[in-house]
Length: 359
Image (tube, rainbow, N blue to C red):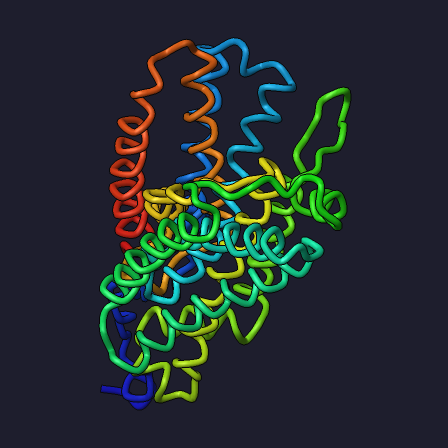
């Protein structure tokens, strides 16, 4: 063998390429459709569009501007309360006293102003203090006792329901309050809480504007503030949230007080819309508010949801409630439709979560 032959390197076969590197599902960018499905409000938005299209064909009067304004009004009275209820649910709790708390607020403002012959604004301010105090009591009891919010707010619900009826009968001798339409400050308060304005020849209630303003504010709080992070944290796992410095007690109590604020605002709207208040009303409304939040994508287990979803959820309620009337159907079907929507929303939310988190 020659030296040249010895110096010539042996031919080598390049190594076979190994198996393709698998992408980590945690870092791979998910398709746009899955990322959209991960948003809690997407499902209810599609549902709201479907309900709207259905009633546009099933109930032709819905196409009229005044009918749509009425639907938005009905939606707004539900939606204003559904927003703080949704925030509370994202924080891991819910409030069964929200419905009767609206009536408590209205009764307080009405009877205080009428019986003491005060400017109605005094009644409005005192009603705000009472509503916030009810919310504080619910939150404080929850934090101090560790009881489930179901039990705490169920007790408050029964207390307020009894007080509403008993005190109204004791003070007025009737189940309804006296009219305050001719009292000082009534017109100014009505302009804030229950006035209307014209858009294209159609009268629109101011509650629609307040509803959208509150929704925008709640969305900003959830997505752009430290307090919004606290809400999601305490709803997801309060012990872990406490371990990283989140003020759990403050967050939960303040969320219940936000529900109290919503009850005050809707109560003032009812009072200045009808001039008087029926003390037995409000029972069952808390379930409507909770259902609107659930349909809007909020989970009963907490830690998940948005402020936009309950807006569409409330719109679906208003659309169905008025659409049945405009279609000329028996209004007794309303609750059946609500039950179907609620169960459908829960199933859709479950499917959306599983689809969005699937690798």
